[in-house]
Length: 424
Image (cartoon, rainbow, N blue to C red; front, side, top):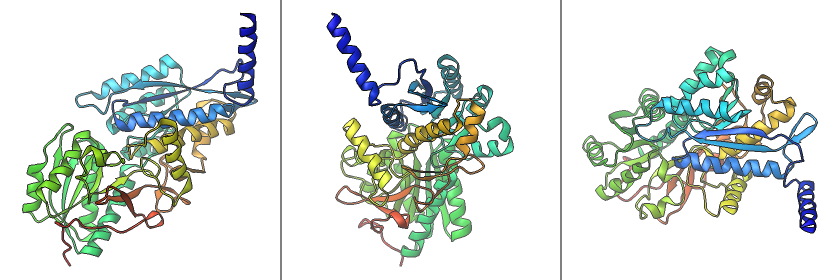
């Protein structure tokens, strides 16, 4: 028994010396991950957070003043992506993880923008920095700008709906130029971020690009039949159908589009289509779709930006499967490093000093160059060496995803299915 005890202590000390476990007596830095773990984006974002934490702890932890301290994760399922779950339940969860687990910061955060916007008051009450990586409504930035002293603890690392509109609008402009199309039909999920994205993208396309909106329809979360709306798009002469969904059932839309041979291009964001597994899940009946990944590295590799490719490869090596969520994992991984570096610069876990350092972030991350604007939103653009970046890509006939936009990341051009024709 004595020999076993001595050996155990020797092994522990050896592991400590190479950073596999924290130093004795070091209190952990507790980071909370409250999000919708019933959603793919939430589950894979948590995995990305865990991967970053494991890397940091293997290096000895985070330096706070003169001591290195490990990170400890606490998680809580807010369930706010599930149909029928009220925002109030998510708010109770956010408050519970803050008060019960004594967290120093939160990452990932609510899935729904409705929950984030209401939860900002809880974050402000307890002065806990939040680096959100899923909820997308720009209304949170508006609240920060209107009352920066109160809401300064909230940051967004992922793409917001305003930037999403920009990427989609540029894609529509490209298709109008190349194919002569100008008739748009909008189909979106009836949740805040999707409504805003669909409505604003259409408004920009109509007012600034010469498109005509020939119809629009909202679908409740959980809807599983889109055939009537697709038929309306056909009847009204739509040439592009803008699709904005994050619910699992929305993948059925692709199969119906193909089986009905609707002569309009499908373009936008359909969450279940984002990862490589969609090809098998939907029996290869998704070729032609133009889709987005909201942040490079999230479910799609790109050899044109090494950090995103490396992150994608490391995730597969660690978990044995590729990512399927095109939104959340990459900024969640970056969020841990943003936080760790801010703590080290501040030399303390004091929330106000920590917020000041988070605002100063300027790092080359998985999603590109990471800098926050005055609304605490990471700036997105086309070149990942200058800003964070998303990408637009297309499913091919042989089950590959080819990036078509932005130009610094493009691997090919848009190809039309045989039942969709150019207007010129």
